[in-house]
Length: 172
Length: 346
Ligand code: SF4
Ligand code: SF4
Image (cartoon, rainbow over all chains, first blue to last red; front, top):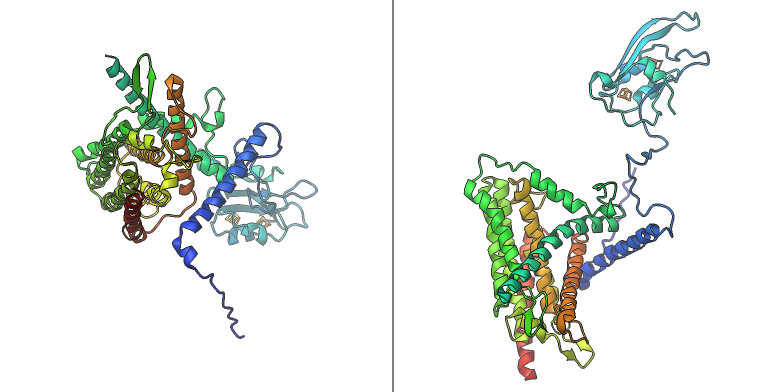
């Protein structure tokens, strides 16, 4: 394949730009315009003449964080219609996890149609890098990362380990 | 007795002017940048739930700096380490004494001068003290006893020497025009009207000098496009080894240096305390003088802050080039033109 080269002409710096002072004034014009337009908005808002925020800032702990629709947040485990976890303990997620933070103990499932199920399913959120590989790997769509919960801090390391019971709690 | 008390009162006014405005500038800097960058800015400090658009932040800053541990690393050169911030701040504060906050007004059968230290060489005094302030920076860099501090101090020395020279050269023009080194006289000289409409302010009679003065003043007071001595992204600067109020004193002296430069600019180029077309007499006139000077200083400070949030920092060689190769020749040319013009006019 031939390499396509496209020459981009750089804007030439003429005498007016070299003097610099005119460019400085233009830059000042931009910042001054921003300043006064925003100030005007703030004043209107303060007087109650204008709804909506005066700036794009989200006052996070007071207002909820705004997350993207596809944001990867805390994991959850999905269940079947009868309430049992969907996970078949195939260990694909545990195998692919680059942080090695999923720990599954398998046991035999009483359901003859299902071979295995998880006795325990722990994710060490403190180690997780939120790559989403576990979600991609799961053949039965048993694990999602769409709880939209980002406040995951804990005072202890053990507090960062989420077990099956808490992972099954659907919070959405 | 009364003259002494009046002097003390004026010195007090100068200190409140400088220190109060410096604290306020910390707030302005944050809020102004926030507003022009579509943000909100610091607004969390509150008193009983009242936030008044973040105005408590300077107070909170002050309390924090005062109560913070004043940590002195073991390797610093002790006497200089303690002396440097005091020298820096002291020189800036002393500059305030010569600023003409207002003119003279008559009341109760005598004249009251609103300049804390009426001096025939006020301008030389301010330039000298600003030059002395460099020693605080160099000393701090040297006392840090580390390469980064020293580098910051050296940069500060090279920069400030370059721009103090430019500043003096720039001010030669207007000073020749006003025919005095007394700041009060210089302000009075701008009270005339040109052709009956335009006030004879320095900004109209010496426009080039005004521009050069702003650049030199910004550089001499280490504002951002010229904040090479600090240069957070490259070296941390001459005050690496300072914490608590000693660091606060460096911040304060930067702000007060700005205020002095802007006050000087207001006095020499914006007509100082003059209000065009109005003759100011009596105590009311005195109050208007104070307000007028204050407003003009604040307007210049506002412009300086805006420049800070507009321009990127210069490289060090560009900075020295600008100082020695552009600013100095231009200011000398301005001086020569002024002298020539005055000679032809007479
Ligand atoms: S998101 Fe990535 S790191 Fe976290 S548990 Fe899943 S596979 Fe492991
Ligand atoms: S990949 Fe899915 S089914 Fe397999 S162990 Fe993980 S969660 Fe369970």
